Length: 181
Image 1: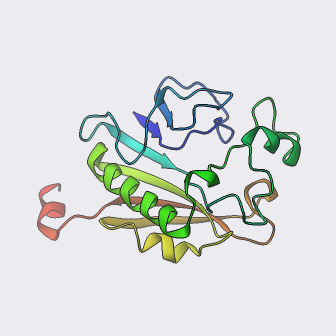
Image 2: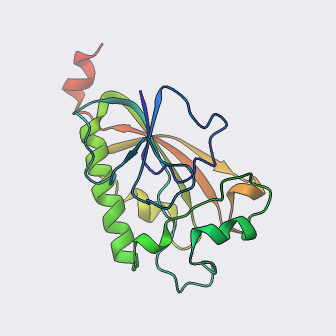
């Protein structure tokens, strides 16, 4: 089972309603509703419920930053034309400061440690529009980076900023790793 922990309007998905994906979000004004309205820092799921978690958190905060010109997500369709019926939603307004954003990411990753299977993977998407990736990875305690993909497609970057997909797994002690063999 896969969890999209920041579903938005599911604009990154080719298949918008896959049976093996649970889509969650806290934004109630989305055009494409999530499977469950839930906060990714405190989910209703059982321990070790998911094989994979997809996490594309907001990459910035507040409404005052010049990059965030359009405060209402309905207007993103105007800024990003050609993305179909459902506009992209970024969630910047959910965190009013850098500290709030970092805190949100920290508490979400703690919840992911609980609901991800021991051999599962977390996929983090990060755009360095305001914060370098290494600063975000330092907040992810209890994870080992397995893979880092740099995305250069214009639809996945904010101007000159770099976008990454990072695959992570739970950290394990040597004794635990050997017992799995």
